[in-house]
Image 1 (tube, rainbow, N blue to C red):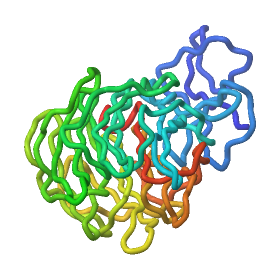
Image 2: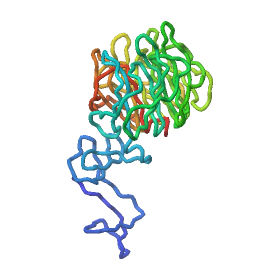
Image 3: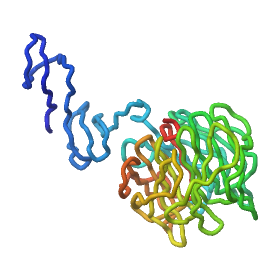
Image 4: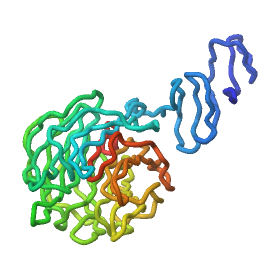
Length: 366
């Protein structure tokens, strides 16, 4: 392991020098240069070791078990993603979680109030909310919530304004927004919202630019973006201002028209991954949320699939589960600020598809 390089340091006698040995205190107005290396150049070392990761462009430390990212936001270090619901062919109520800054398999969290598929999720930094879904033969209006930092079963929150499945959700730190969906035999353009810190029924927000289901959504702290969907394979992206109410506005188009993508975001960039059109896709494309315009190619998922769930920290996006064809338990991740192909993260506790995901440190909270 390389040592920390400290230059132009003033010691306690007032002289300067670059060779330090056996010191307990360093006083300097100059920066300290840490060891720098890629993710692949990490080595097994002692707890408390500190380095700059040139692959992810992050400062990280070793806790004795794994490398954790240090951020301006302390919540990023322990940012947690939670995947809920879905189906294996049998409806699931399972909730499982990951620590987004690390890699590894998901861990059991608890259960939803209702086992269901084709639901949507959003979150604040403390609370995750799952809404809608499908339990044959009916679309669901149920909303339930969890406290992300703990584990345990979900609790009833209230009801959506319209029961529906295959909808999408996004959020700021205070408001969650659910858009689109399907209620047999009708595709929906409805948008409704909740105040995440309270409980109660959703309130009408406005309408999407077109009726559709099987879409995905992501957000900055001010703007929510909905992309893709069905009937057919749709490339439409539209957006809302989360703090207001009103109809969505056209944003641009995805690089590939598709249904069943998954989406996540940093505070500036939204990323849409996977989907179906008319085969399962590995495509990842991205947008700059504060602007409008068409999406740009980002890279590829590790496995071509749709019907996944996605969540993020402010730096890393994670895609979990899906159908490939065949049920998938794959979790892979990207560094949102860069472009490139996804990397294997681990596995869900239960492979499943048409699930939903949320997190404690996504782009809508930045």
